Length: 244
Image (cartoon, rainbow, N blue to C red):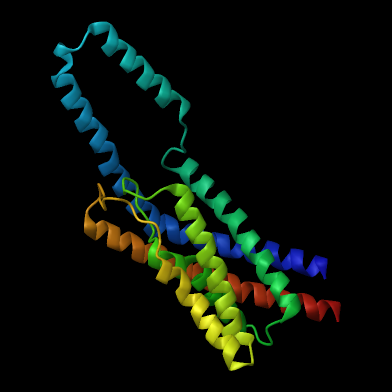
């Protein structure tokens, strides 16, 4: 059983990670690069405004500010556009995909899908739990978008994912009507509480770019989870046939 779970997670995670990376490189990443161009333009405008008032500042204070700024920039590292960004994205997608595939394979040991197409339902459940429901309160954000406190957002995201998973499980597998009603309550509860929001909603990127990014992120994740669910169900059933 452990071997079957590991093989299912490894192969299906790799396949889904490839699908996700290709979709992101074709649609999501270009939108992020566009948003980064707006984000990078803002500091440049601030620098121009700062230099226009530089004559009123002491020379040694201005020099110290420049040194501090350069040292701060030197400490920060990010993958460059091109193969570095693609490689970093692909590796992170692989880690995440294998982790989610391990979760699916573990659930299959409790209730295995009878047909491969039923893996699609498990995948869509994962999409609703980890992407769709949290995005209803905290939609995907482009660089340069104002956001609430990170810790509060993480707490809300985790609570929403747990409540959605439990709610979907009760709706799908519970037999008593009271448990199914409890499932509906769990689905609605995080959104009744509300996600933490910034004091002022603002973004450096145009609104049209934001909308396209949200759509691209959701559709890309939906296709990722669909591929992961189908692949995990197929590999798990294949392993069961080999064991038999």
